[in-house]
Image (cartoon, rainbow, N blue to C red; front, top):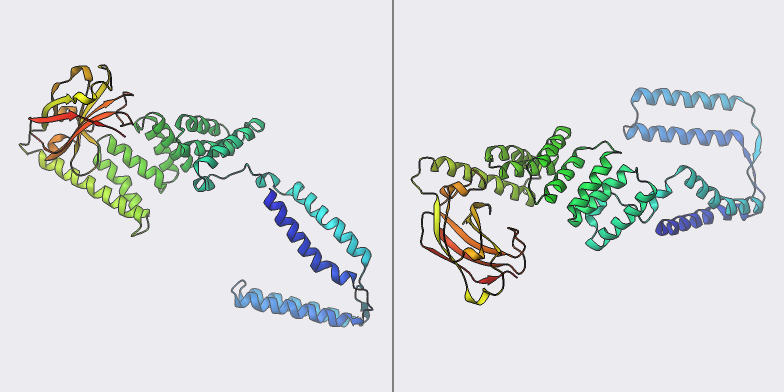
Length: 402
C-alpha cells in the first residue's frame, strides 16, 4: 500500500506538470476556422481507420462502411457556413482547481470503485506464495489469520492460508484451513490436489483412502492437472499396482516440456517401474528364494545410548532402483542379539519383493521416536551388496545418525 501510494503520487505530479503550464500561460489566442478544425478531426479519424485495416483489426467491408460514414459527416459539417472560434485561453483559476481537486477526485473515485483492499501488505495470492521464504510465509500466515477474524467467511483467504501452511509443512493446519475454505468456495482441480497432498502428509505420507478420493475429483475436473497426476501415480505405486501407476505418469510426461529436468526425472521413474514389472514377470518362473537373513547385534560403545524398549526396524532396500523397503520387520533392543530372516511375506508392496532383485542393502535402525523415518540421534547399522538368498549376514548397529 505504501509503495502504491508513492507511485500514485509521482504519477499525479507528472500529470499536473503536463496540464498546468499551458493553463498558466496567459496570452491572446488566434481565431481558428471551425471548418478547419473539423477537417483535421476527420483526417485523424481516417488515418486511425487506415491503421486498423492495416493491422487486421477490421475487415475491408467494415473499413468501407466506416469511411463512408466519416466522409458523410465531413460533408454535412462543411455545408454549414464557416465561422471563427476562440481557442481556450490560459486560466490561473482553472489551473488551481485542477491542482487541488484532481488528486482528491482520483483518490475518492478509486476508493469508491476500485479495490484498495487488494493493495494491503497482508494480501498475497496462492501463486506468489512460492516466492516467499519460510519467515515470510510465517508472517503471511499471521496476517491472514488476522484478516480472517474480520472476514471469517472469506473462502479465498482460507485457501491461501491452507497453501501457506502446506508449504511450511504444517499439514494438520493446512487440512483444517482447506476444510474451512471448502465451506465458502467451489473447489477446483488444484484445490483437491493440494488438499489430497496435505491430507496424506498429515497421516504420515499415506496416500491411500481419502487422499486418493480427492485426487480422483481433481482429475475429473482437470485431466491435465500435473500435481494430481503425479500423486495419483504415486498412490498406485505405493499400493503395489505398478501398471496403474504408469497410466497417470505417462500422461504427465506428455504434458512436460521435452528435455526439461522434470521430464527427464519423470521418464527415469517410468523406466524404473517398467523394469520392475519386467522383473516381476521374470521371477514368476525364477527359482530365486525371496529371503535374506543373518544376525543383528548392538555395538558395546552404544549400548548405553538407548533403553531396552527402544524400537528397532530391520529392512531391505533394493541395491538399485526405487528406495522402497522390499521387506521389513520390527523388534526392540531387548531382543538383540537376534537371528533374523526377511522374506517375501514381509513385503510392503506386493509387486516389490525380495525375489524380484538379486542384491539388497540391509539396515537395522534403533529409533528413539519409534518412527521408521531416520532422525538425529537414532542408531543404525548397514550392509551393502547383500545377495538375496544369503543367510549368514552380520548386521551391527554401530553408527549414530547425525
